[in-house]
Length: 239
Image (cartoon, rainbow, N blue to C red; front, side, top):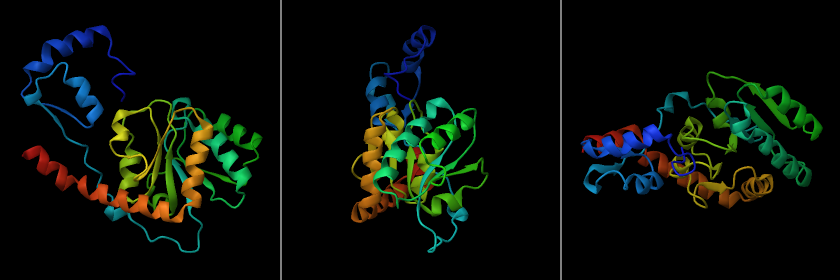
């Protein structure tokens, strides 16, 4: 999560100062957290070790050449996930580009009914596809144009790691330091302000219209996925 935006309760802050420096090694998975932890941990005991990507190669399914690529959201349907912002942004995009890909929403949660009502009010009945909870999401990644993670607050969602395995461009919000370690703005996706439908719509439109841009982002996601494979990361852990 965001260590600066979500500070620990005071008992944990005290424990952190009393215990972290006694550890043989303290690890974090991103540079922003590393800079914060430098206040509590000696330099020689602190290191960055990224999370390994999940092994999903066995789940790859052939891409359907006849199907139009979708814009994909995978996750819980609750307020903090920002799906209402995604629907608003997508509505703006679809109004300007009626032929844009469908928005596929995989997941369920307490906000689903409210979100379906919002989609209807926005005139998206024919453009948003609700898939509910799925145990195997490989086919949705395989046939996605890109993944959107519109969270208002977030740690490191597994969907970002999964999307990298499938070499997808990714749009995230700037609410998580950990996620920004895996999505490099302008390289394999876009990082937009949270709760900003206009910025999100602009990023989605750029990826929809920019064939060369999309291809470049996809290549970089694939390259990053190789560097973050379990074998590569475990080698760093054992070094």
